Length: 268
Image 1: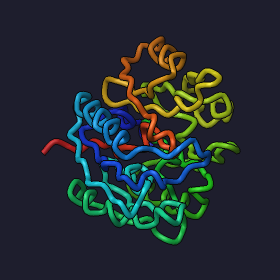
Image 2: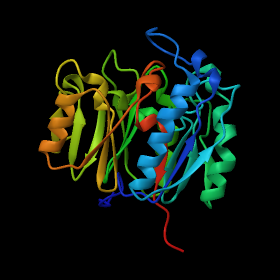
Image 3: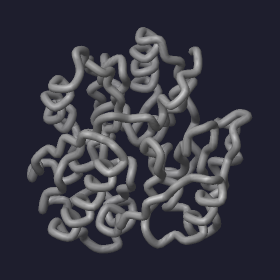
Image 4: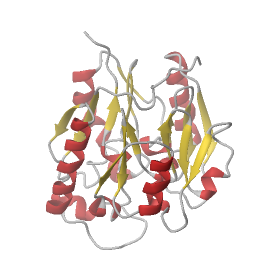
């Protein structure tokens, strides 16, 4: 597709959802203790303020106690200026989250489509760049779902490429992010994957792999707290940064990108 400068980081709006108390029962690969709903909500409020200060209008949806992982709104949907896609998360306990977020999508987009077929796609496996959308296969995103999703994107004029996510990576974006301006932040294993072509790749220092999940929002990069080497590496590339706590999200395998759907709407 023709490159669309700023597609991956120039946004006007975001959708988030307040963490529930049931987040203590959220999915996790490693048990490092249960997150506190109250502390998670405090961190989430800081996150929402950071998005607003970056220039976004933020819709904050109410908590869903029946869906412990529902604050991670990136997984059940994907948004583009052309419209929104209701995805189908690849974990049984999250199957209803797409239906729950549908009304919020329809309030913002004239076109909202549902992922066809019976495949699965988690939004955490989808990395939007300015000239291509990368879809990583994982335990949460299968080839059937990725193919169906790529078909929707093609209909809307976007190129998509399905990637074999390296072993040991939960979600594609667990191990990489776009900093915009053809710069990628990635763990060593993801940097060596060849997925990013000729783009510059900033490698996350050893021991700070969690910090590979950052988000560029307009003129700032939001970075998780507690990873000074990664923060310095991003700043050395000339990016303005804002540091945010993600201690509670991390206990249930969540990161900064997971907590919002970010998109640009045309001026009316």
